[in-house]
Image (cartoon, rainbow, N blue to C red; front, top):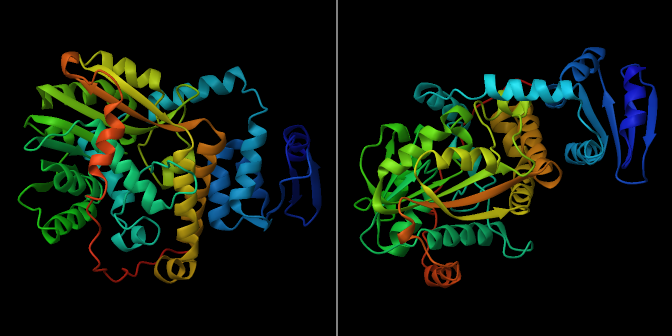
Length: 419
């Protein structure tokens, strides 16, 4: 009864048909579309939903207690997000969210950071090959047109970042959180620079090192299993893509102070990160527990406040509002196109968990105020670009000079998760 009362007030957009644990059907109509039907299979799930909906929805879908009878989990989450936009959070909820964010999700020590990274990024190279582009870019692509292919958009992203770095032959570059190595290899080949890549993922380190050897770039691109806090060299340029989300709110000043110390006096750095346009947020409890432990998406206000304390100067900020939603759309479609392979190698529990992960993140970027920002910074503003005109010119310079993934593919690792 409480759920029916809530849904009558909640549903203002779309039509939701709910089949309760007793098999009774209830319809809540705000508008004709979207039209979604869901089945709640247990009373325990309903109780958990009231206590913590952000955690219970994902757990219910993965366990099978929440079933989608019409539409997809993406459709259902989009309907929920569309209606959440009409709700005003209570003062108590605001307080609890701020408390949870500050107290529970900020302390990423080097040891804890490595454990968090291993939990997600060390699953298997073969898993990520199923849905990423050929270069295995696991971060927001850059769509000059929403009709761009994923391959094109990821190439655009690498060119765009390379241009913002103002590269010159012979420079030393540090890539903090280098992923599978694609960006580091791109910079070394396209701009004749030396690159050091840092990662805490053993799987990414193995793949990136093998790629550098196969590309004939081992003498100019080296990858290390190392926390950025333990790096001591100085670099002309620093790039960090998709890593700042794992730093932890209480470590932001430490992060930017470390970048300051690692840059040469004329150095320049670029950070590419997920952010929240609506101000400081709270980590999604399901994502934080099952996908990205220790993760947090900062607001620009939090980021720039920490940067100002580090003596660095912000010289360019670009906001990408729709790009990650489109990236995630491609990833989700590719992942689901390999449904049978995922079931064989990882099991139905894992399939539902990752489908929910990709769908919920896409919804967050479409409806919940999340975006990506690229932040350029320098030690000395005298060495910052005077205007932004150089970006397009340098992008054209890098066109056609990018490293591709080796054709050789490893066989999938058979790893089974219980359903």
